[in-house]
Length: 142
Image (cartoon, rainbow, N blue to C red; front, side, top):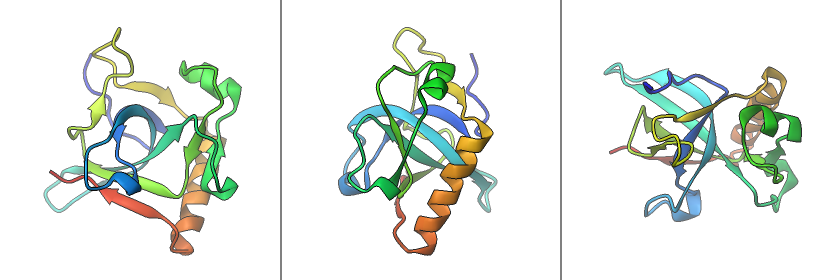
């Protein structure tokens, strides 16, 4: 199966590097939602992703809970999960952090798209963090 085309709202497998870990490598492969796709001067696709985690947020404004019906639709597990809205990773697509969604499907790298209304709320919260200068960004350029 070919790599998916990166698009806003697509949930991919990715080795996310938390801001607090930015001197190293991502420690866990996880679902991440693509937030922005742009192109640089060389024509490379630049992708910004928000991580999805099972850990409840310390700051309720820093994450958006994924409804159980959306998790079922995407084929994610049944545990509660949140999309972190106050930090992002940026990388050149496909980058070395792209990961298969499961060991049993080594040629599949995405779970599908977030519903439009959930994606719009995700963007709204990220923009609010950016305006308040609370958005953390880790650039993962080779």
